[in-house]
Image (cartoon, rainbow, N blue to C red; front, side, top):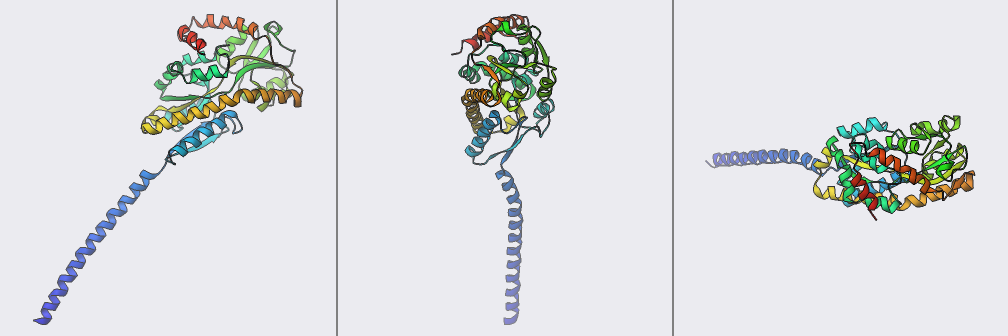
Amino acid sequence: MHISLKKGGLVMKRGRYLILAFVLSVSIVLIGFSFPSKARADEPIKLVLYWLLGKETLQYRGLTIFMDGVEKRTNGQIKFKRYCCGSLGKETETLENLRAGSIDFKCSGIGWWARYHKPIDMIQLPYLFQDYDHVYKFAISPLYEKLTKGLEKYNMKPIMQFNAGFKDLSNSVKPIHSLDDVPKGLKIRVPPMPMNLAAWKAFGASPVALKPVELYMALKTGVVDAQENGPNNTKDMKLYEVQKYFSYIKYAWMGPLLVMNLQRWNTLPSDIQKIIKEEAAKGAKYTFDQGKKANDDALRWMEKEKGLIADWNPDRESFKRRAEKVYRDCEKEPWYDAELVKKIKALK
């Protein structure tokens, strides 16, 4: 009896051990399943941002301020995959990739977004803005939000306007101080954007639409004699090698707009959306604050080091008066909003 009771006790103990082992096994399995799901929840949200041009540009430096700021304020919850320098493709294809969602952020010139929402072209009207402060006040105003909101129909969320400076005039023919000095039919390269073409036709030139990559050789070979980039872009593209005269006419403002895929934007928590908007404003402000100095410094450098002959204070009013023709022509277009243009000009 003593032995059988002992055996029974061993059986009971063994049974308890087996039950305990089973419970522990199930617990381990459940814990094992819970770890991957927690790891996935803790993984950062990766966002792809694409800037077509180089890292040395003022705009990319502003975008870097934006991306670094978002990553820091979200404690790494947001991580950017940063692409530039043509690595993901050309403007047309990558704008469509933004719409499709394979790119989360795209920063491109105003004219590219106007291809989707035509009223955006109004931003490129000649002599719409007085100076950088005027542009920035517009960029952070409800007027700007109203003008760009139409992009949302194309699955695009406008985030913030960055600065690339004002458009000017350089040529290899003669000094140009006023509109009267513009040679009739001057062959000037402009980007393939309707507003730029219209302005130079009004100024009496013969604008030729060419892509940026074609510009240097076009100037060198005489396909065109002039171009309308600001000093900073003129320097970066080494156009001083094929141009002799520069006129600081500041006839139109240009700048890239940072846009996000709307569907992706809507998946983000509201606090992260707020951080993105705030940090984008900081990055954009940097490009506005540095823009004037960068262009002035570039023009001084081209004068001193490369012998470019610069007219710092041309007769801008002569160009401005002729630019009114562009406004009158635009009033015939269904996308043009004369009242909105009036309000933009009145911003102080």
